[in-house]
Image 1 (cartoon, helix red, strand yellow):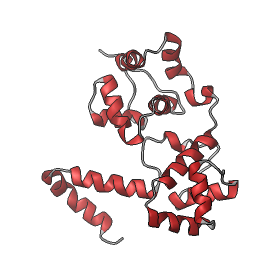
Image 2 (spheres, rainbow, N blue to C red):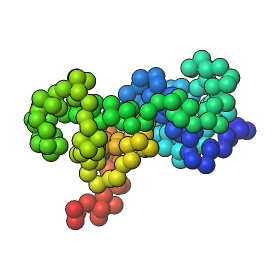
Image 3 (tube, one colour):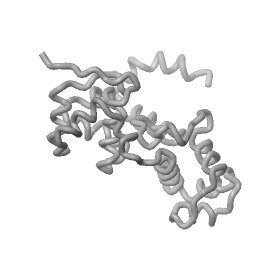
Image 4 (tube, rainbow, N blue to C red):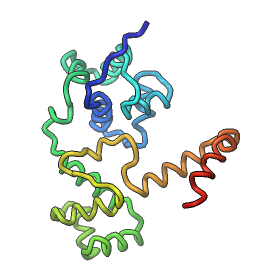
Length: 202
């Protein structure tokens, strides 16, 4: 029987998995697929591991170590250490990079809308994206609220850039649309009554 490794109380194992994928420069949308490839599991299990909903097995940990050529100390660290904290990486700076990447990916018309919402000139936004200018703290907070209008985020403590799930409204909308398109006719028919009750009064 496979040995199941107990995750740390704060869920650091799932965050460590996200950290390893982020460190490999994998786009967030590919994280679950990549993890599934690493440990030879189905996509649903990979997604649950990334969200901390299931526990990592010993053979899966070893498979990750083999894929990344990790030394033994690094393998132990996945289980016992907060890799993000150990790395010395600034959560705030990486969150800022992530948010500015979201700005960069906005369509042209949306960038003008974004600039107006933040209260800056479009040329300032362009300089932020190019790295020529760094937004002030109050503007960073406004940027975060633009993408996450109904959520409070401590940008110094909460690593948005390591979230396995979409963190901004636009990404969440795209995720939902993609999932609905990928559903089989049978699944849509089974889920429709519940979705209808949930969405009809919005």
